[in-house]
Length: 395
Ligand SMILES: Cc1cc2nc3c(=O)[nH]c(=O)nc-3n(C[C@H](O)[C@H](O)[C@H](O)COP(=O)(O)OP(=O)(O)OC[C@H]3O[C@@H](n4cnc5c(N)ncnc54)[C@H](O)[C@@H]3O)c2cc1C
Image (cartoon, rainbow, N blue to C red; front, side, top):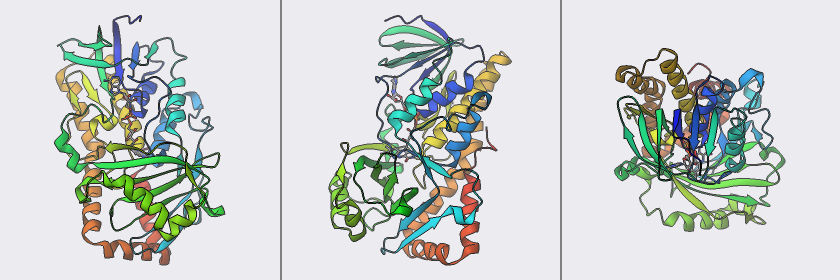
């Protein structure tokens, strides 16, 4: 394979984090190489829920008013959600009623198509090269460059983006603070007319404060799965598969929806490295983004928005380094502060909410009761969460 050995920026991992970084750097005159160990398009176990932060960051990444998300056909707009509480109370919220929405509050996508679409938007630039099925190993830092092996061949870059996701994180002890999720695509699921554009969350006692999700997709498909914060799950994770089938067969609400449904893909699992305060996001000329930096939202398990945002932030930092020809340790390590300032406060707050709700399930029940009965409370809470996830102010 032809791997010319030098570039300005090497991006390792072609998920949303690495690709957002590349989109930020695109057209700025830098030579960029993107590596992924898998053949593309590739599947990635994921619910494919894009929230407000993902939407706003994609808008920032859209060059010349060519809105990336507008031009992606495989998306399903989301304008509300349904929650079933551990006491089996069901609430349905349409955010359309509370806000004059100029755009959906979220979308669902199939990651196989979505990541491939982002990549496709990069490859029309001759300064950007993509190397699929190329595993990067042995990254060695030097004062003025980084050396690494790409499928065994020695390469050099001025800066490296570690966008390798969760696979490469070696500190297994961190997993006690992470979440685990299993997911599958499902066809022939029964959805009421008003459920086609809603996310559904089922909180059940065994996995609470985790949940079972149903995310509608286009073409009669849905993405379903279980999200389980490890710290609060006392059984073995091996039980989750069994619990998944038990739930869709015997929970009265779910069994009705799944009566004629069948799995359209194998159940797949994966870790979600939940964000925790004071992470380390850079080492010399290597900047971490997305899951590799442990940036998944501790409350809802959303990682795509933070992956895109951190990739964009890293891209802006790199541009500044090249524009000012400043590759000093002091400047590069200030990326740590930028990511800390962007996420730390939010992570702390959201961990606290999960901890509180896990100890006080009655408060969780009451909260949804009030959300359902009090317009003012609902508007206040939704506005708070929507604005706290707004990325248009960041980066
Ligand atoms: C079951 C499940 C459901 C989820 N549902 C949602 C959801 O609905 N909404 C949401 O926002 N988030 C969800 N997440 C989280 C979300 O999937 C991740 O946060 C997101 O994919 C992170 O993006 P990333 O670019 O950091 O990493 P990834 O998307 O994991 O990409 C990393 C890439 O790096 C490549 N790579 C790894 N090592 C190497 C190497 N050495 N050399 C070359 N390439 C390498 C991999 O092949 C991969 O393509 C879910 C996660 C799981 C596990």
